[in-house]
Image (cartoon, rainbow, N blue to C red; front, top):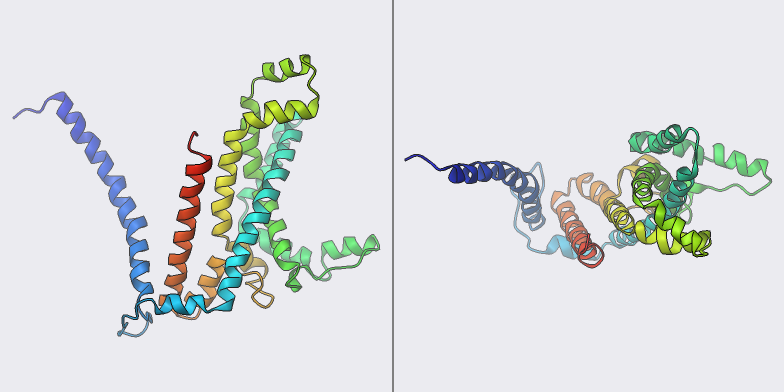
Length: 290
């Protein structure tokens, strides 16, 4: 029987949809379900016997002090790092927009750190944070007291946040520059004619015009902070005294690193639930109209 053009189009549409669907189920959903299955077992990668223990790994997780510290640190990275990166990148984007000469060169310079390996960036900043590193040399030359930076539990987490904000600055600047260029100049000119000063033009014209870009930037930063890992490994490896661990670094060092795969899978399940809840909740509340 000869197929009509409409039927052939539907067949081809389904064929093209099947491939990404199979890929998504096998690469995304499959490992997630398998990790949940592993979290319910005492999973030793070497032993053949992997007994079912139910929620025992989750009970052990709930009683682990380092896990709760890692969970708290994860939210510190979110609540401090995300707003800091947002404000600094917005200020930089506003400054770059006003430049007349060498605009392209400055944009490239700000974007270069973002395309540099996180591990390489971490090692360079680790050297600058050392007791005899660049930052303490600057403090000493100004007559100010030096700091341990990565050597103190009180300052290490904020040193990591500062490095991460610097590394991700270029990506957010590019997003905000695109948003600033999409705001019609006529709106700003009309506000100026009506007597609005620079702050009022920013507050009532520029900021609302950047609304969708700000929400998108926060969304990316939020998920990135919840899965923060590379910079911690490069700078502190979770130290000192496990004071800078996040959920992901805790999973790596206390689960995979100690060959406790079932325990690590339990951490992964908690992290998945946390990320999924934050992502869907944020999109439903703040990005429902975007």
